Image (tube, rainbow, N blue to C red; front, top):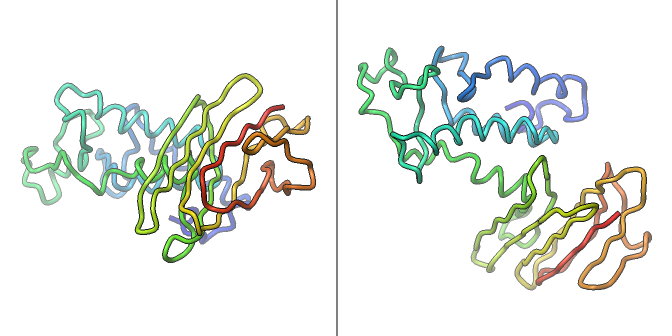
Length: 234
């Protein structure tokens, strides 16, 4: 919560230490909740993956998604399409047995919307697409790749469709996106090789170095809402 809601400066040594301490609670199938021993809460783990992503710990976030939500998605007794309220660290579904659920595993929800944190996390941090002001008139795209080769997400608001997709290749990646006309956004493009200058092509035109700013390993550009296609190579 401290990372996610900016209680600590994300560039401070304290912030850098939090993700490693969070992994003290890791198990092969998820993060055990300290306040609920031997139980795993995908609801609380949803905040953890967002905290990792907030400071660019992409690998840790993806690892937790795979171990927890991946475990349930592939479980023979799961639904293969929804998310579970919680489960035991030993892999059984007796969540909260000793605290309010009367030792009745059938009480545990297997369609628990509060446990669906990866949906927004993958959209807003990995694909990197989010709105940044009321009425959705401003937005940003700031992607995190991790070990993924491609990612795509989108949503619709009253202004229209927002969609983004990136795909990596050898020494390059492409990013295409769409935002409603009349909106404005900021694009932060990861520069993959810090030792060389990236070549950025927007809608078929190569940009000069004066047409974007470099900030913390990203090339930052402003865009008007529309359909755009970007290639970053190095």
